[in-house]
Image (cartoon, rainbow, N blue to C red; front, side):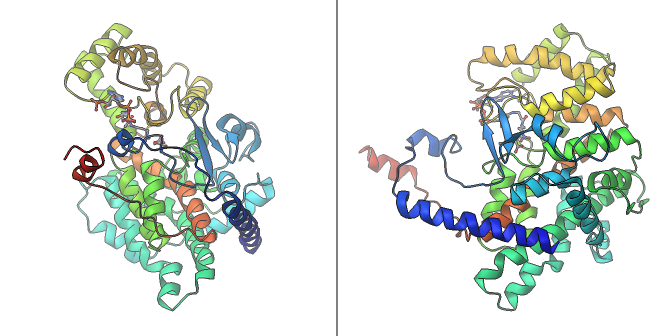
Length: 435
Ligand code: NMX
Ligand code: MLT
């Protein structure tokens, strides 16, 4: 732990110096222009943030510290030969910019096991909620209850110096990443398995143990969890969950408050909740058409009906990507390897052949291709995890790795409170001499 912390601090000091120099020499360099339309249309394409952990390319998809998903699947240490990468290894990579050795990852997995204790009052708080509460609400309530444990909040109250913010953030980050799977597993077991809690297996890696605590001990499901936790971890800084975590953290709200805020954003249907919406939509289609395996023609008609009802096709489109999401492809490869004949997975692939030309023909959808959420649910259903309202919690567990490592960077680089300027339409009209 001390080694990882010192390594991070050394990297952050080095980058901090480089940034100082860059700003000294080039601080006034103009890097773009802002069109009026952008401030009315979700700031699309506007460069406004620094996020060190990953970078999204519209064509090639996400790169974590310059590594594509394919490269991560090859290069990151794994639980077993030829298997999927360990998500703790990706966290290490995002945090210090280096691919760890298997030994370094094993040490990190053991540290996370040791720090994973969740106090009883947190479970009691979640238990007070009615069981019909949405899993994402239960999850965020659990994180908020756990906030009482924040090292950052305690040290700030005791008068912490600015130069120590990074360290308190680092401590909270490791504690949170260690504890989040326990809270998430509790949500699942309480809501769907009559509250029968499963004890952690101290010998397993972070994602393997999470699968175990959910109640899925199939080795293949553990592999799916490792892949799932890697591909959902980060998507540069502008997506709603990452941006919210960063924004709330900029007020020096501690990592618990910041992460919980970000996850409330992930719970929106245009963001992370789309993964539940996809399976719900497919199940409804199957029910309505009275078939497990709808034909391409039937899918086409169902998509047209969805659009005619003024709804979006969940799992398709993206604010930045303009090609099939490589995270969709990675899951497709997993499906081809482990369940090539699964009817639901095959339906997802048939939807992939059918939907893009229809969305393209509308003439307004900028990206007709599938995103990460179009595939994830079908793989989970294959292993029996059919409770689709729970899916966004899985996304949230993974997203902790990205948004919290980014938060460590924010505090280590001394990022200020975020406060962009807003204007009224009356002010816009004045600029344009329309008033
Ligand atoms: N189905 C139907 N219409 C769509 C879709 C879709 N999948 N995607 C975009 N459009 C519409 C969009 O609603 C908008 O219509 P209008 O002008 O009538 O308001 C128009 O196309 C232009 O939108 P875009 O500029 O292409 O997309 P934008 O950047 O605004 O939004 C999403 C991006 C991802 C919110 C949007 O594509 C969408 O709603 N997709 C479905 C929900 C989804 O899968 N979200 C998950 C994203 C990934 N994640 O995990 O966060
Ligand atoms: C994500 O993973 O955060 C989504 O693809 C949404 C985004 O990048 O805007």
